[in-house]
Image 1 (cartoon, rainbow, N blue to C red):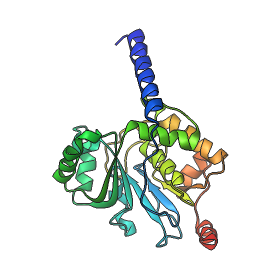
Image 2: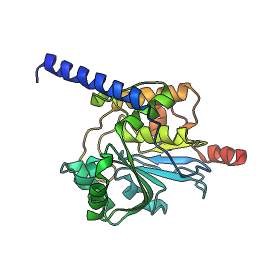
Image 3: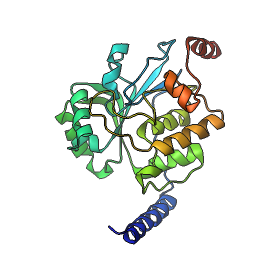
Image 4: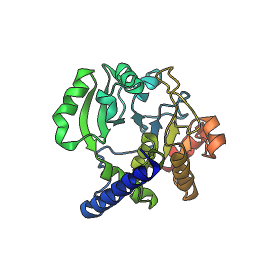
Length: 253
């Protein structure tokens, strides 16, 4: 595709999505889970750390196959999982690996992003095919995800280019904050990393700059965002979650 044709295609997509977004006026994805304490968002970067001061009030959100990396923490069933649509039937390396590591596992609430809402039964069948269970199944469309970003950052993003989108990990952070999480702790979310915690394929990460931009904005606004990963704390200037931080947070509840 030539540069001009690509620009025209992207412009048409932006106009179409902007109009549909304005007409539909979607809300961010709903949540029935109550966040009583810190929310730990576990991304799929190769290095993860269990946050200090773990308690029964901690909620866990996993991303794609990252659930497999926290079994050693004693977390067999996360509260929420965010999964991209292509992980269910995709044939690329990452999708195959996600299905492999999630086979036989389950989650309380599963949010599948960008699956067609009129094809719910196909999704149910696809999840059943690799033995991934859930209590609640929620399909999140593009416009609900756009709404979440706008509600939390004031940014309107038509998601035409890959580099314009947030990663699912950062979307999970926005989701938790939107639904009242008192603190959000990220681990395994590192825009500077490559590869995934649940395989050795070393695949490159997308959404690097947008993730950094959103994280910087959340910190500048004083949002209660922390990381359990010392290197990420140093690189992105995110406050490090420590036992002392956990004690202070517990004292306020």
